[in-house]
Amino acid sequence: MQIPDIIIAIDGYSSTGKSSFAKIIAKEFSFLYLDSGALYRGVTLFAIENGYIGDDNTINVPELDKALSGLDLHFGPNGTYIGKRCIEKEIRSMEVAGKVSPIAAVAEVRTFVDRKLREFGRNGRIVMDGRDIGTTVFPDAQLKVFMTADPLVRAQRRADEMRAKGMETDLQEVLKNLQERDYIDSHREVSPLTQAEDAIVLDNSHMTMEEQLQWLKNIIKERFGL
Image (cartoon, rainbow, N blue to C red; front, side, top):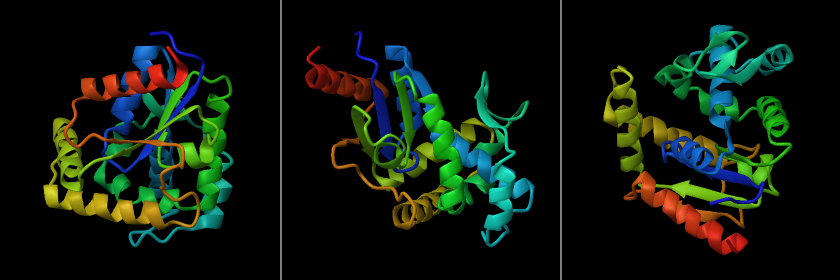
């Protein structure tokens, strides 16, 4: 199915499968996929490694902001990179997961990431997932989806994903982390996680990826008269 050169913005809670869904969409429609969460995780890893965030999640915002001006964070052939170094595996760790929400709540960090994302999205025909894509990054996106799922289902998905990568994990620990991230993301002062007024809700608690893709195709056919 050939669709117009639109921007598809996918927002929602963590571990609802936003990235997997966006990648499937990109492949199906030959769109460019942009993982906004990976950029926030990249900044978080950078902050951890350079001492800009402490064990208690206290952030040295002035120094981090200063360092961001020289941070070469970008997408490459194997995922997310800082310079020539692929950091895709490191940014999926529990350590990064536990600190990404405080980092993402920093206004200077959001400005840095938003600027990079808008550069990628200038020509349309992209699909991007995150927590404020349809409300802040691309408020004029032609199609917005807000994804949600039962918290326990989300925690199980995240735990399975981590085990598949050889990481030891505890389901209750993962669930606690998800709930903490939900609260921080929804209550931060800058670009909180919220459903855009014109977004369509997708609860995929009991849906396969194929069913989700068909759901989106039906939405697109109706929306654009295809």
